[in-house]
Image 1: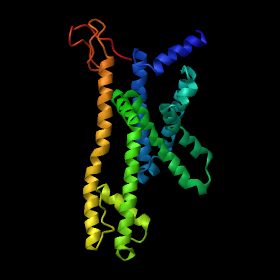
Image 2: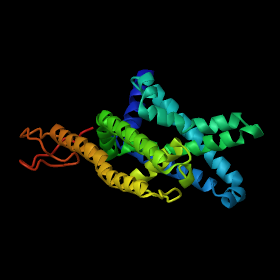
Image 3: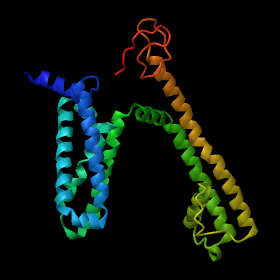
Image 4: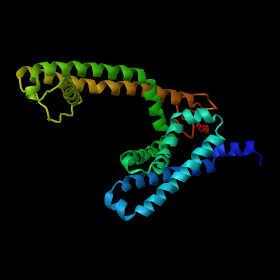
Length: 272
C-alpha cells in the first residue's frame, strides 16, 4: 500500500464519519475521552487518589499515549497539517496531552502548584467531544459570527460597572466597606449580574437608590447576549436547512438529519 493511499484511508477513518470504520473510531474516541476526564476528576479526590495512585497514574499515561498517537496520526493524514494544528480542535487536541508531559518534566517540589494546574488542564479533553456534535458546532459558529456584537456588549458592561462602581465609592466611601474603586467595581459586577453575595452593601439612602438602579439594569442586560446569540443561531439553522436540498425535487428546508424528502419522499443525501 502506497503512503498516499494510507494517508487517504486514515483521513477517511479519523476525519470522516460516513464509513463504518470512521463511525467506530469516533465512538471509541468519545468513550476514551469520557473515561479519561472521569479519571482526572476522581484523581482530585484525595482519598481516592491516595488509595489508587498507581492505577490512576497508569490509566492517565495510557490515555496520554493514546491521545498523543491520535494527535500525531491526525497531523500525518491531514491534508493541511499546519492548518489543523492552528485550528480550534488542533489546539484542544494538543492541550489534552501537553499537561501530562509538562508535569513529567517538572518534578521539582517548588513547581508543585504549577504541576497541579497543568494536571487540571487535562479537563480540556472534554472539548474534543465538540467535533462529534453537529449542534455544538452550529452553536460555536453562531457565537463566532456574533463575536463582535458580544465584544461590544461586554465593553459596554465594563464601562457601566466602572461608572457605577466609581459612583458608589464616592457615595458610600471606605466607612461602609467600599474601600477602593476596584472593590466598588467588584460590588457593581456582583450586583449587575444579579449574584448579590451580600459581603458589601450600601448603607445610605442615595447608595441604596443607586444599587436599585443597578439591579434593574442587570435584569435588562441579561436579555442582550441571549438575543444576539439566538438571532445568529436562527440564521445558522436556516442556512443548515437551506443547504440540505433534495436531489430529486431540489427543494430545501429539510432538517439536517432527514432521511427522506418531506415533499416528494425521495431518499435524501446525508450531508457530510
